[in-house]
Amino acid sequence: MTDGNVKILIIEDEPQIRRFVRTALIAQNFDVLEAENGKDGLIAAETGKPDLVILDLGLPDMDGVEIVRRIREWTPIPIIVLSARTTESVKIATLDRGADDYLAKPFGIGELMARIRVSLRHSTNASKDAHGEYINGTLKVDLTHRRVFIGDQEIHLTPIEYRLLGVLIRNAGRVITHRQILREVWGPSHSEDSHYVRIYMAQLRHKLEKDPAQPQFLLTEAGVGYRLSDG
Image (cartoon, rainbow, N blue to C red; front, side, top):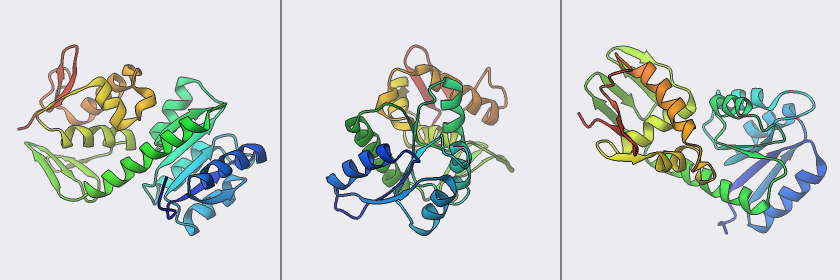
């Protein structure tokens, strides 16, 4: 149960699903905003100041991936995508644009509530850990403004790449297992999707390491996981 002051925006064009989700959220004491298309959803996201967005990808007026991108231009609030599209490429594209989680239709309300709790917890922890600076040799991370530098060069990271780096920074010097990383970055429902970690770690090394084949910062612990060198 919540304190009743957490506001969730549902952007969904199917009235039955919208009503189903709304009823479940109200039962858990969430405040609810609703929109049945992308245009109204973007307006509601900006004016209603929700704490979390539940978004359907298949909207009548615009693609949900574009809505994720536009929301991410001005706010880091959690976005949980609901979609009948289940191909891995669509999931990765949606997450890369900045969505926090992806739930395939049909879904159970218990699983949706669990995803909401995880996303809100990540958001709270990010707020607490959002300030300060991490420096390790040539790697510098401005945690306040979410900016990453190698030497004087700023490096652009996708939202998931930044979250992955953030988990490693919070545990610098410690070995983090694949499953721990998956729980922290993607949520507990993805605890078996270890290929996600390999894909994004390779991307992160390509951007941050002078020689990705012989990394200086992002170290592999064979058969276990990864470790950020502690300098």
